[in-house]
Image (cartoon, rainbow, N blue to C red; front, side, top):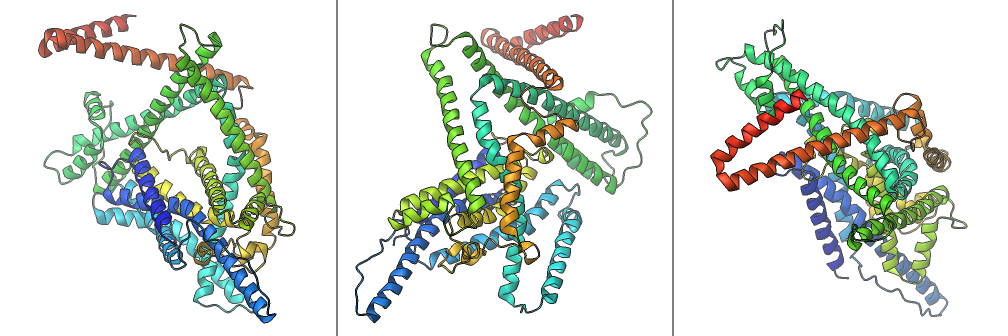
Length: 597
């Protein structure tokens, strides 16, 4: 009954969340409140994923003890005896621990995802120059957002009042609010899982083919290049407007400090480029006001964010394409190790190929089991859900480790599928998680919001898959502390009728549509070109365009590397001042020859 396993998971989960946030965020650049809020959101979401299996195994033990006590009482009445006993789980946690833990996690996550993080997200993109002004803009920006939910709450309240035979108290209001939150999460979850449960294993299998991955990377390069050009044009337009404003606001102007705030947001190289560019002919700037500067500030932040996102994606994609080109070239020229291809490099690429295929098979098997269990978890006699049968078998053998292992595996896979889909949706491409501290505050806050909103209903869905939710199997059982605090997998009463029919039906239809790539084909027909294996001329043209762009980027990197090497050699041979002068002369010669060519 020691708390060692729970404490270990609490600490390990915090370290994992902190390390991931350090990798994707920028602790030294981002505001400390944003970093702390996102850390709490990520940490509590991960905590649910890794601690819930301990709650499940403890609940299995409590169910066994409840059954044993009932049997003992019956045996005492009949003057009989029962020699059964219940084994204590190796990770058993006392009953009073989990309720307090889940209350803290649940209410903190709900406050973050529905109140704090949306306001913080609007606050980060506001263009005002004071805290009060940013808060006012954040509240106005969220007015429609909150008014929508207020309207839904009013509709639910009227429904509650008009429904006969329903007495309302604090507990029932909490249950209705929880059901409304679960309804939102479950409908979003079925959309994400319907796509990801098919796409994740298929993507892993296709990634094992270097030629397919390379063609897809060329396709992505062409599309990203277009987005990159649009981001550059947006930055240029904003800089042109900003340059005209600087002519009207001198050092003594009352708006000069606001202008300096805007200028500090612009990187040094872009400020130098703005200073060298001539002002457009005939451009007469309007008299600037504080409101116009607020609007300009917001435009500058948005344009720079888009440029930062596309540049981060470009660098990552170029590294990926170059590595894929090496692998594809090796496999096309050689089938076994030789003098030109060392065994270590050969087995690295071969091992990666086999590893991806193995992962694809495992993911496909797990996806098939999840889809089948989602279709049948409302059926309790006979038990058709695969995971419910596994847990029941492990329960009869007191195999708590298997229960915790299968619970962690399924929940983690569901979370990976859902969250990876969120950041791949083209509509949400404004949000992007980039490694090496390249993620902006806006995307980090969005990720925290989605984690807090999706994790609770996703875990309730898992408890339904293993038949540990009494509202799903329609049988009174001793439930987990998680369910007692966070509610059941219920939806609001207006749409609850037939939920066990259309929930799995929609999931199956979406999975079938994803398998046949119906969504991608429809988007391609509408002009939003998608990569479907190079089946049409437009896809082939984009692949060729991406290949040319990669060649151009490789030449640029090679020239940059040669220039850095020459500068370092001159510095070592002739010293700093002479080396710099010689290099400047060489650079001027290269520029003039390149212009003539």
